[in-house]
Amino acid sequence: MISDDEVHTIVHCSAGVGRTGVTIALDAAWERLQNGLTVDPKQLLEEMRNQRGCLIQENWNQSAFYIL
Image (cartoon, rainbow, N blue to C red; front, side, top):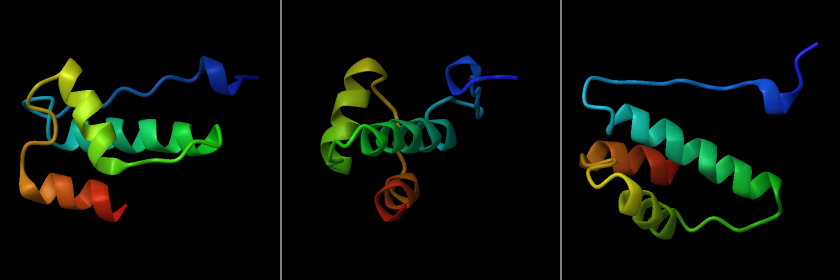
């Protein structure tokens, strides 16, 4: 039996910032919600961009993250 902390997700798109960024941001937001924390999409995106500058660069990627 595999526990939740043994499961890892790997996602990649051609540049590693668009679809991958949306997926990573959603995962980070979901983890925060599960821990009873609030999620500010704009702040989360800024925090993530400090680690990877071009993350979620296209407007449609940002829209997808904010809507979801």
